[in-house]
Length: 275
Length: 275
Image (tube, rainbow over all chains, first blue to last red):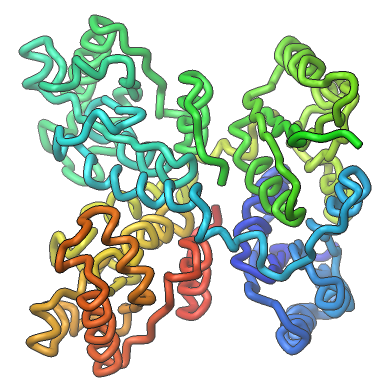
């Protein structure tokens, strides 16, 4: 048997985002296999296609597995050149475009780079505005323009509010704010000022104390802040506070920002831009 | 001929991110067709599969086009239930998993939700740390820990630095900082303090003055800041400054954050986490 990691090429005529996202999702179905991935992006003319072909051939050594090539090349001619390589070719476009063309009774534009020519669309504009809004409303920075927000995350420090807010903005175009719940809030037994009037937008994040302890210790080892005891106390207090206000929460211990964001959008029935 | 928008279902046993990303990329190849997209996420048991089937059937009306179903359902049984709907089915997993299984000589885990069970991986951890780093180093907020950064974006206000930094962090796990180039810098003819020693990490963003004028006017109409004349002056001055320091720049006028980020990663040969 051959050994060593399997080489995977993501080849695209654009940014490679689609190839990488789908490819990662596919490859993660095979546990125990080690993959070495190489992205080749903006392969959008014959010259670059030939360079790419050579790059694949340089990586193909006798006695080793042939590479796996995952491609999103819209232009047939370019796909053909890359297709000459001795590899397992998985063509993410051709496998799908043909049935879609038949269904829609239309030829696809087959236009190089088209799939990301989105800068002038209202959706793109909205996503960028949402990212700017979210950075200005991270971690309770300001109460200004909070009525513009579509979702407001609350939770203890380091429970995942910031990356989730950013993801909601970048991918769903949602104006997202987030507020930390801190010991002062627990003592008062009340939400940070100004949030009560936006209760219908509030979404809680919680986390297991042990995991929180671990995360906080990376930054401030041996501090009271990071101690397991304090983490337990803060998590319990935050859940008590959220319960009091009828705020539902999600658990970031085992859910990624992608999963948390999708769950929030679905549970709240939020209207989003499609990216 | 039937008329009206085509209904597209994105159906997934997880967050639906993969289905949506690939689906959008595929559908954007068909210009002039209007699509109405519906996401059904977390379809991970038989009951939810049957609800989903009913949802598709409710949307299928006599005299109208049948829906298009783009799915990433790993479990065969669930895919089969959804597959009973009268629709064009594009199964994003089965079309690819079979050849990959043959190539790798392995059965895929076919594990529901596996493709996003990433929270415990070092890559995920790094991406979250990168997002936190980037928010703390947005818009020249601080020079602290700048030696930890992997890329530092510079450009005039509203040239796209913030969303690009955030994207680089979220998707590539890169510790990204960004600094505005402001009139004071142009007068001094020098970069903001502290950046010179990190010259090899600097990447410029530029933008066409007309577009900058448009973007700035949305926030501060009729201000000097947003005037076309001032935008022209700032863009020219920033390019002069970048040229002086040998900083290459990219143009955000027509490039999306996805494209800018991919180009930066490729041009700089940056080592990234795969998402």
